[in-house]
Amino acid sequence: MYPVHSVAVAVCALSIVFTFGSAIAAIAPGQSDDFQGGTTQGWSIGPNSSLPPDVIASGGPGGSVDAYLRLQASGFTGPGGKLVAFNAGSWVGDYLDAGVTAITMQVRNYGTTDVALRLILEGGIVDALASLEAVNVPAGSDWTEVTFSLAAAALGGGDFQSVMGSVTTLNLVHSPAFITARTQTPFVAAVIGVDNITAVPEPQALALTAVGIGALLLRFARRRHC
Image (cartoon, rainbow, N blue to C red; front, side, top):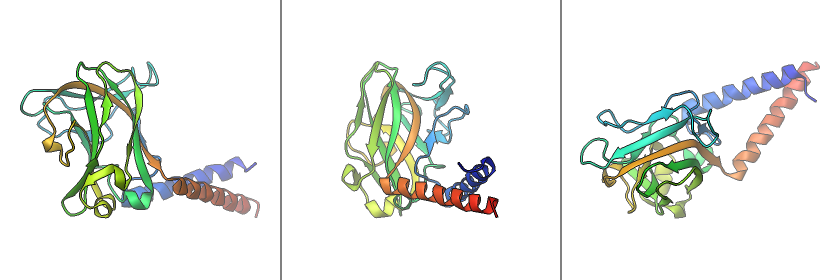
């Protein structure tokens, strides 16, 4: 067993590495928005909406102490009438280099209207990709985990390499029809809960992370005994 001090130092070192990497590329395999801190973690729908995203402190998929993000749309023409949310913070960067192959999240439909969710990834030189197939969330459904593949075959619109190599905004929208811009989404009256938005790494990325952690632990253990 490694000394506690060595493990602590290794964890600290890894935190610095991932923090530095995030500052450069932002997106990181395994990152997750769970909203337990009480903030929207960068998810927004713009400054003019009458129904901005908000965090509900309890009732998430984990139960009474689990917070989640609530997204609402009025269905009326004008700001707040469309079900959209976007993040131009921690979800930007080079998805290809990070090895992120999918995004999972848990979703609950609190409304009386079925919702068809898609991801739109903006990036490159004024370009965008979007989910070819929508994820349907029936009205009144309970919490369920959904997966959005980021494989080239699952996305349409712009140039795959250009967009995925330089994502500037990640959008979550309702649209039964295929679209490549959140401005194209239809007006809909809806209320959904979203939680545990997670970047799924490819197996190679997981293996490299495990090897890296093992190497750091071994290195610090050896220094400890020098």
